[in-house]
Amino acid sequence: MKELIIKYKEKGLKLTPQRLAILNYLDGNTSHPSAGDIYKHIKRVYPTVSFATVYNTLQVLHEKGEVMEITIDPQKKHYDPNTKAHHHIICTECNKIGDIFEDYSGAIRLPHHIAEEFKPVGNHINFYGICKKCQNLSRYVSKREKQKRRD
Amino acid sequence: MKELIIKYKEKGLKLTPQRLAILNYLDGNTSHPSAGDIYKHIKRVYPTVSFATVYNTLQVLHEKGEVMEITIDPQKKHYDPNTKAHHHIICTECNKIGDIFEDYSGAIRLPHHIAEEFKPVGNHINFYGICKKCQNLSRYVSKREKQKRRD
DNA sequence: TATTAGATTAGAATAATTCCATTCTCGTAA
DNA sequence: TTACGAGAATGGAATTATTCTAATCTAATA
Image 1 (cartoon, rainbow over the protein chains, first blue to last red):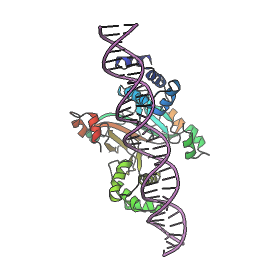
Image 2: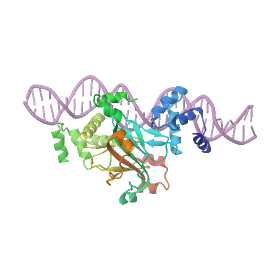
Image 3: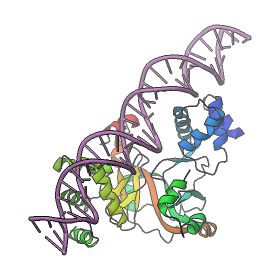
Image 4: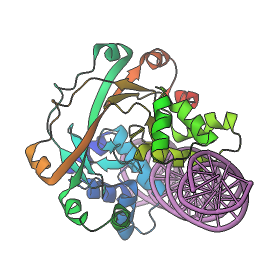
């Protein structure tokens, strides 16, 4: 976190209280929050914070390579402050996201004819599964009802 | 396509002109259209078609396993009538999506501790790259300007 | 050909995200 | 310190994707 603040300053970015709160919330956070999750959390401390600020900050952080934008939930983006290359698994029932730090880089090379057309810049594996909790719930709760339980 | 119609009927679904138009548009389509793309196209033939019909049809097709929902573009879902397991590459400049039919299934096994928590149901690799066209364009066009060129 | 389950429609509602104009403030230079 | 200016925060409107709803229609079959 300290380093993040320093890095932030080095890049000529202003450290406002709102930004600090967002940085603090993200630091070490493994819950893969959405912009809305972050907004809700920051709002507790800064009730006047605007969505635009959250999005702006996330955009800046993303541009600086300080957060990962996760495209795994078709409803919305999620964010991950862990920028070490890794992958994710999402529960198809409750949308809970888990981290996967296995290194598959050697195993998922692009086929030649694709590499000829696209200059590769990265990759990300979306795994889909059903988490323990939902495996149990699904015995008696429909998916629609579980949808309602999502925060 | 023929088979799809038959399958469609077998499942007790009505074959309306709008649905047929959507099925026709999707059949063999490798352009990974979004719901909006499909809507725009069908509207030419059925000017009164509603977005709800497009979404309904896509949902039905998806439930029946006849189209793949692609979560690679954070802006919106894309659809792929090719339901053979495969992966995708997206151009980070123009969002063009390409297919990758390489089989990586043996190479991307879940780590044990994850497999213990999640019952696996699938996976999908998102590759990111810059397509030929954008590699050339990028010599003199900013990303913002290219954004505007997206259809 | 009448029936009806299921499909279509327009439009409203919702949700995520972006945009914009105004106001504010952090960080620096005097 | 203090004043300044670039960049940041704000509220609210606007956009975009998607879902919902209630009324109307129609494909398929009896």
